[in-house]
Image (cartoon, rainbow, N blue to C red; front, side, top):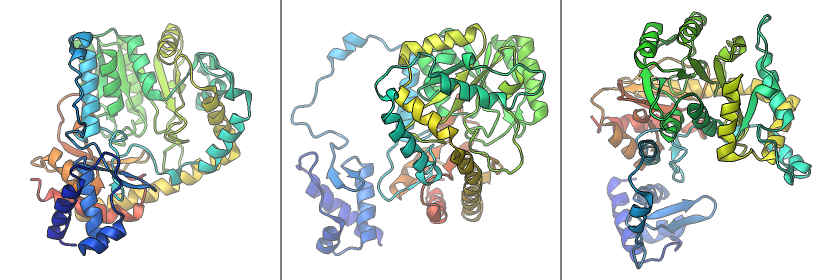
Length: 487
């Protein structure tokens, strides 16, 4: 495939699209190959360019259609000027959230579920695992059973269905050592995904404008939730064993913050798991400052080692110090947005009230299906097999990075999670790299949006749990080729 033939075809298709109504189907690939005398690869490359320009949209299994385009195709442009008076000046939290969401959608940072993947592109940016890594059969069967039950036509208690609350509490209690009071079902609030739980927690532990300490880099959704809640994020640095205890103590002293958001197990994006000694140090520091730990255990189901992993920090806490988040959305199915927060004492009731104010309750249909899946013996079998699948995909992508990106630094090989965290040369034009890689058919996530303040380096995050692992090697070769042009 020559670049000139692809460019020529793009020009011809732009002319064809001009004046066509939104939704007009483009000729099939076979017809374009025949009429323009090019190969299928040239056609796919041209279509990816047009998708990136917003001129066409692909609908998997249906075809490619004329889109609204970057400037729109309305005969009479819509007038939204009235909204200026209705909305008034933007609030700080709203502006922050809008900025984060826009950056994520544009690909300048963030997980990328908000960025659609063009047809035939390699998805290394998405925050979700490939459907082949999900218990799809269990999910379908559970949804069918739930649809035949009373859950299909009833409401749910605001804290969640008793059976599911008991399951979350029991799972955490299994990791609780003797001498520590285990969590109870009454401590659990079921969430419509942990993203909404983060906003509810931030609002419960801090007023708008108050500081909340956060690891840096971190999960983009936590940054977004903080913006929605109006809290002020204060980053703290860390190393291979977890947050620097001296720096954490200094930050809590300087800011007076009363909450610390962190991912002690397989942190997103770095993959770091806190060492046992670091966990004890962090606990002592938070106790001394009278502060909460917001423990996001997002990767509980994504461990890759055969030896036992450290228990959640919440399993060692019976003083209500740790607010624990647990999600089933990524590991069971993105269609089952179900998670939970475990919080003891008054903070638990405050969080529950915040959740109810925004979501009322989680669909009992989804709760019933989720409980059905995780209660099956086949769920444990699936999780055991998942370790090997993730490990082989991780190694495949890591080998490709080492081979084709020798100037990059792979910051450790994670023992769990879904991502590799890769540092690029400091002179890399990161925004251009993301855009040009997408045009070349490879979707990557910029690291800039994963820092709550200024980035400390030039990073990309690559998801090894996405589809088509056989295309990892050529995809990284593509990234390497584009990188040479972006420095």
